[in-house]
Image (tube, rainbow, N blue to C red; front, side, top):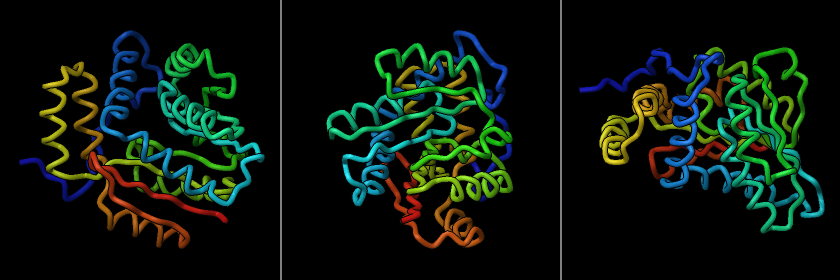
Length: 236
């Protein structure tokens, strides 16, 4: 039986920022496909929509996605904003240059999206500002100390708020993913990294403890289907 009492520190293949090639491209696209199929991206869109309820639709809103992968979340947000008639400036951040180049290729029809190859723990990103910042399946890649540092930075620089969409660490989620990955025919990297991702995910009490330690009081934390947590932190 798998042990989910503590977060694992096992590395994922995708944590190698120098990785490139067809295997990485396939894995990025498979992850995006899973998120769309299971409704994971909808969790982030709902979070953005909630933060923007009091913002006039005539205002242009800047949204940054850290750990953007192949850019699927930003393309979905761009489509959503177009339907709403809302003006947005979308920016994807990832430390892997190959990943960024793939995202740029896939986003050719989206002039409102820009991509930048940047380490979010670099001095360059430290001074970035944005209205809303997204962490979609990003936080679980880091240690607790790194997560605290990142959230402090995002909380300081986001003018409107933060939308976090990440995994619930659970035995049920783990074994469901094993079954799903077999039926769906995922590639080796997606299968292995997916299992590790779940074991690097979070329990509700851990996210509440993080909020308390960082003095974050204006937030909502909801469990969502496909074993996700939607954590919306408001600055307004």
